[in-house]
Image 1 (spheres, one colour):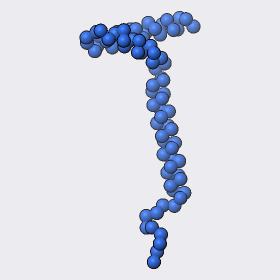
Image 2: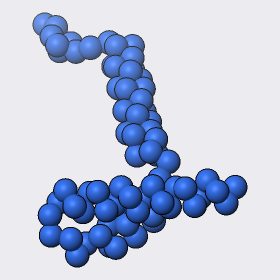
Image 3: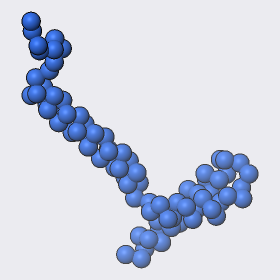
Length: 81
């Protein structure tokens, strides 16, 4: 009688699969962080801009207000360097 399970994987395959999944996870998290940090706009400025433009009724007006607010903040940040 055979005591070995029929579908058992060798340890090498399991370790290779775990290592590759770890690398894929790290790559995905790095890409996600890059998407959030790629804009270069500090989150504090985004929050201030959204709060300053919250009284506008239409989404398009709010987005335009936030964009102009962030552009002005960016110009001030660049000019202060």
